[in-house]
Image 1 (tube, rainbow, N blue to C red):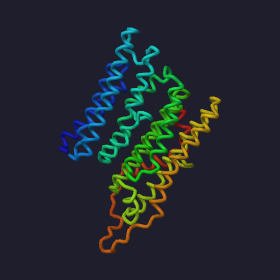
Image 2 (image 1 turned 180 degrees about the vertical axis):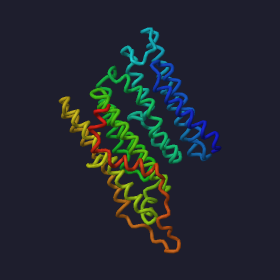
Image 3 (image 1 turned 90 degrees about the vertical axis):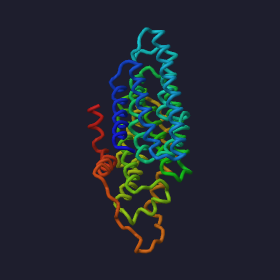
Image 4 (image 1 turned 90 degrees about the horizontal axis):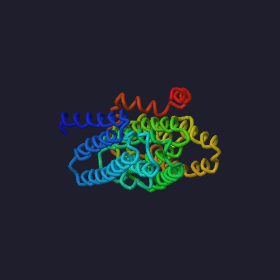
Length: 344
């Protein structure tokens, strides 16, 4: 893609998200979401491949449907209440707006577009879609969290955790695995949204950090399939080792970064006397743990294919400072979790 066009698209993404973050008016927030959607579509189709065109079409139709639902619900709410304020919602339209925002995020059962879209686009665009594009809808969801129905959030959260674990088990494509991982993590956030919005925000920030670290690592070794990871060990053993640790962090194993949000969420659910919900959530997360451990097994224990020594490029992968920084954050934030929670 032309560097000038790329800069314009990235600037548009930044402007759209900033506009939504700064708005207290539904119409302005909707405009920011639309700018975000239109800015990422050229990035999806920068490689003119049928899969990329199909992914961009699916993404556009899904996001357009959710945006139409947001605009319609906000307009009806303004007609009923006389206000466009985000925090002033009447009862019937709170559910429709929440569902539309969850559709934009890719929460189950409104998740069907996400794995297919991420599978059809480059890793760099998948990184933007999995992290930056979720900031604006999640911010709006946080603002209306006190008005959202608790049963809806619990249902969507548990369904997303189950689908995120179940869907990723039989996958061999790394981008689809990251998509189902995203669905599962968003389920944890939505589950605790009504009880403790600050904890949802903390979980969201850590999710962005860990997902970005994983995508940067995959971009460094140019791997999109599980079979390609097994041959990456001779090229960059340190990078593959840190990728394994990032996967374990995404799984939520102690003492890595990903353990802190899961621990805090389970403690918050126990504090709210929802022990059954906490137990079901922990059991459902075992599905996701399985495919994370399977990926780790492939990375470390699977022998690389037998290649003649003359054609083996040993340790030729260049690690960028950004990859190193995000990986460090994705592994070592756990001891600082209480400090971050106090700041929030």
